[in-house]
Amino acid sequence: MNAVRRALGSGLVQAFLVVIGLVWLTPLAGLFVSSLRSAGDSAKGGWWTALASPGQLSFDNYTALLKNAGITQAFWNTVMISVPTTVLVVVIAALAGYAFAWLDFPGREPLFLLVVALLVVPVQIGLLPVAKLFGQLGLFGTIPGVVLFHVAYGLPFAVFLLRNYFAEMPKEMLEAARMDGGNEWRIFTRLVLPVGRPALASLAIFQFLWVWNDMLVALLFADSSAQPLTVELQSQIRQFGSNIDVLAPGAFLSLIVPVAVFFAFQRHFVQGVMAGSVK
Image (cartoon, rainbow, N blue to C red; front, side, top):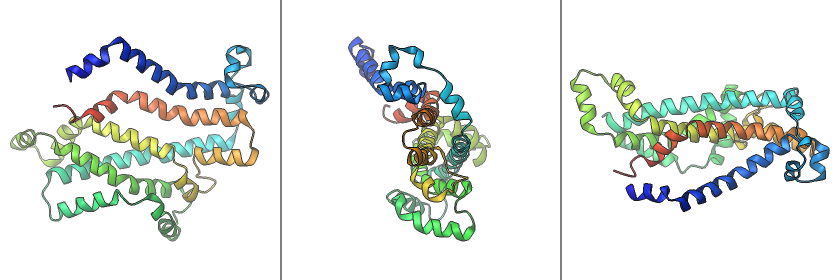
């Protein structure tokens, strides 16, 4: 670990990481600049030409975007799909992961093997059968239907991840809590969840990014009143083709939210990724 820290502390490595960061942020910066330009200016040259003529830049496109009923409704649909899905997956997976890791109940190992087996099932296999089932239940084309689909397909990986993380916790710590009179629910909420916060944050980030950027499931399961931002932007491209003054700010809005979520939780994300890699 000390060798890794010394390597990361060297000036050459830091300069290299800065370059990588700038390269990674260039598309985001280009999209932001494009979102501030008019359609006429965008047709005349690339986004980098605006750096020499900052007078081209204005927030008129965002003002027009807020007046676009389809885009704004799709944005809130995306929020109403992504947030409940992430919360449900994290909560259910945390409960199941703790049960598989530390509770003895009949069929625990076969059930966990079934969860692991579900990891290899492609999402495409379940599209048509689940669509028919949702049609019979009245959920097809609705936001709850999209949420349920994402929760069902997000849980196997989430349970697998949290079970393995919780299983690495010291057994003596949990036994001491039980000797002090703590029941399983109190141990789970007061001990396991705080210790497992890095893994929970990492899972929440992965799940949120996956659902926010999804288009395949929403394209099939959401109707026009429930479609998220990815589907609405694709529809705008298909209908108008070159309305860059609407598509660019819409795409930037779709991109900046998951980027902001990632940077807000990056400390926990790094802790979750590194957990268990160094003793």
